[in-house]
Amino acid sequence: RRVVASAPPPAIGRGPAASAGSCLPEVRFEIEAPPGADASMLQFLKQALPLCEHHAFVQHFTFVQGQYEFGTVNHALCSAIRDLLKEFSVKVGQLETALRTGNLSIAKLWYHIQPSMDTFALLHRVASRVFGVVGGSVLNGIEEVMARSSLNSAQDLCEYLLQQASRPYFEMVSKWIYEGRLDDPYGEFFISESARVRDERFGGPAADFWQKHFALEERAVPQFMAASREK
Image (cartoon, helix red, strand yellow):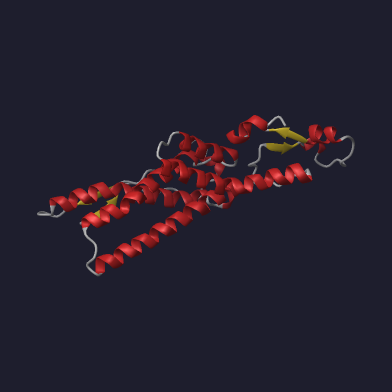
């Protein structure tokens, strides 16, 4: 049996500006079965193919969106997803060992890949939602997927991804609040510095400092911080 990809090789190296509004190409696999192939085996392969497609899509997402120009939030998100990919690779190795020793049946294989199918289906949805965006938009995309997920396991996974991806964002918030400076080389933060006063000496009342030096970027505010954005 031969499994082939039906999607063309995806383009590599697109930056955030070029990727806005676009999407990664979907990966599709098909089975070329020889005459007389076992029908039950073919049925199992068809049921398992979505896991392969989700895995290929998610893996490619981390390669593209993990590049430096996509910013620290995406770097943290892709790092968390890569950890999940590594865990899955370990599981595959364990299944291969069981197969070689004669301890793996189709029923056992189907049982063991069920959690992975759910995990990668969710990761596929997250990757599709946040592809091509940066900063707070990534965090908002993860929250949207979480809000539409009813399973507790899906909620927990989204919460994990949100926690990991938001860490560099909260570091920016902390530096801005406690030090009065922006550390935002990728343009991810919801606060921007006024070009007019960027090189002026700091001075005057504290209120004047905040009002004159910084501006709020409404579209970049994460949803979980929307209630306190005016503070």
